[in-house]
Image 1: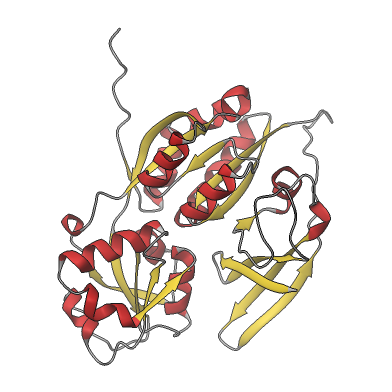
Image 2: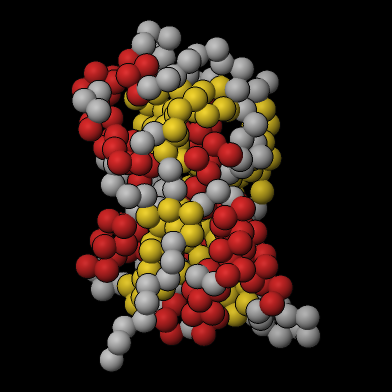
Length: 318
């Protein structure tokens, strides 16, 4: 049995333990499947709920303290005991804190229970393609939404958010990073990025380094992470002397500081498309969540967490 996972926030990691390959889920033994709430398991893996356990590991500088929890799917009920509609929300790891706050607000005003799953956009796209129980998807990358649209899985989409890349170092570091060229210096032995071949934050970071003519020289230092929160974690724990993450991720951590803001012109525009998936389009609660995420109350929360909220496209003229 092997342990996998991705970091959450406030020092907490949620991980999955897979007892073996679960046929028909689209996943294999030893594959990381991201951060899911306990209640999403039965919907995401309906045929094999017993094959998965949720592990919460509180990580401190002195070492990990594991707490093993059973992953039990709980049915949501309204105040009158009636079943509440369940909505599967898949979100890029960088949106974890904002979406947790937004879904809590949504549940207070709607008769629905939102089950969240956070991981890299690449991981989530492959889960959706494999039939995971997703109704609404907030991706950190346009290309992965294009990928799903090519598969016929997208009902509606719109670019919702923007973000920026920054270089971070541990909060107690004396390193000075005045330019991207400084990443070539000897004091930086390891540079944490999201996987530059799949994770959006890593893809954008690689574009910036390529456009500055630095990628070939800095590549040997790169520690590729499963998602941007894990890249942040590597810097927080001193396992990397520097990292490139979104500004919104840097803002949630007291263990890192921003050393450099990266010129936005060095990469493709960082856009977060919001997607209503095919099965969600058939569920009124999912449509309501999609609309709510694009509305003013959610925009207030996204801005509070440092995202740029993009204007909704003008309606088409008939």
